[in-house]
Length: 159
Image (cartoon, rainbow, N blue to C red; front, side, top):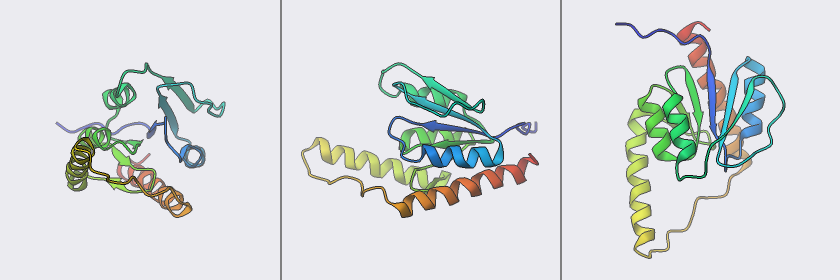
C-alpha cells in the first residue's frame, strides 16, 4: 500500500523556549505554510490566519505529546527536545533543532543516548555545564535548514 502524499506542509513548533519562532513565521509566510505554535502557557503570536496557537496543560511533556500525536510525513517540527524529535522522525516528519541541526534516523539514537548519559551524570551530582549560548550563526543555520526542509517536501510531494 502506498502512503498518500500530504496536501500541505505543516510546521509544528515546540514553542515554550523556542528562540526561532520569528524565523519560522518568516519562512512560513514566504511559502504559504500553516504553523502551529504549541506551548504550556499563553504566548503572543502574530495574528495571521495561517498561525494557530495551541496552549496545552502544564503536565510534563504535554506539548510534546500533543505534537507527536498529530505529526506525520510532510510535516516539520521545530524542537530542541530530543525525545520529541525521535518520536517525530519515527512518524516520518522532519525534526529541526533551533540551531539548524536536523534530527535523522541515524542521528537521533546517538542524541538520545548522549542526553540520557548527561542526565544520569547530573543526577549523580556531576557538573556538566550547559548548552552553549544561542548565536546569530545558529539562527542563520536554522533558517537555511528550515528552507531546505520545506523545499525537500515540496519536491517530494509536488506541493
